[in-house]
Amino acid sequence: MKAIVIEKPGEINIIDREIPNITTNQVLIKVKAAGICGSDVHIYHGKNAFATYPRVVGHEFVGEIVKIGKDVKGFQEGDRVAVDPVVSCGECYPCKIGRHNVCRNLQVMGVHMDGGFQEYVAVEYQQLYKLPENIPWEIAATVEPFSIGAQVAHRGRLSASDTVLICGAGPIGLIILQVAKMKGAKVAILDIVETRLKKAKELGADKTINGKEKNITEAINEFTNGEGVNLIYEATGNKNILQTCIRELPSPAGRIVVLGFTTDELSFRQVDIMSRELEIIGTRLNNHRFAEVIEWFKQNRVQQKEIITHTFPFEKAKNAFKLNDEKPEEVFKIILTF
Picture 1 (cartoon, one colour):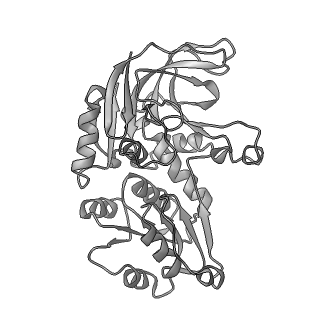
Picture 2 (spheres, helix red, strand yellow):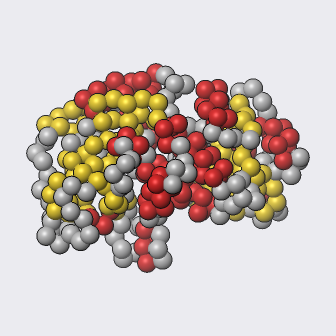
């Protein structure tokens, strides 16, 4: 079989590998489609603090079961499935309190272990979710990124009464926007790429803010009549944006959900958090949100096609990564087909 391997930062190759064997609790999946995520791009550029090399990347993937281990329950050959890439130990404190996505011994397919950018992959059956027959493979590959939208909604206690700021109008920001509007919130979204802001407006954003052209604090004061937003999603990984989110943008009793990440140290005043009783909330991956997202898909509650801008056969993965690097204003989500 063929596999897309990032040998080291900046070097991506398609190599031949043996089709993997499966254990009694695993299934063999023939991969049909997989999305390129920002974290895959970061691994390619050597900017992901969690990745090791060489690595088959890809954690947004779907496919068809072609072989089943003898202890697998609830699945059969021919089933169409989405794969949750989160692998946890089940024994540590986070796992015991139902937060396996931050397991002490966390393994994420495509980051710590090989992922879905290969023609066949072996996975534990507990990671699988059945897909309806009428969802095309390319659309199904967005279940995982939409699970991030479901997770951050849960972590931020998102509700119809919220006034929300989303920092970053990339694919995840646009997904969070869709989830927030689905739940009835009033939403502003920030970016510096005008094509992304235009798409956000099409998807229902109540206000778009170009950070290159407008003072962010002034824009939020206009949006909220000076009260500040009560829920912020920071998805850029830019420390200066996060510092502004803490210092200047939230209302008293506001919540700031951090999903972008950097290893840079931040500078902020404790009094800005204490005096307004702010909540700074981390969020990572998803915590069993696939079933919820698949229901959204069944009910046509989200617009998956709106975040997909390009589709490439997997043999042209180098071209796909190159396009993502060279034309960020044109790219939201790239899907590789197998």
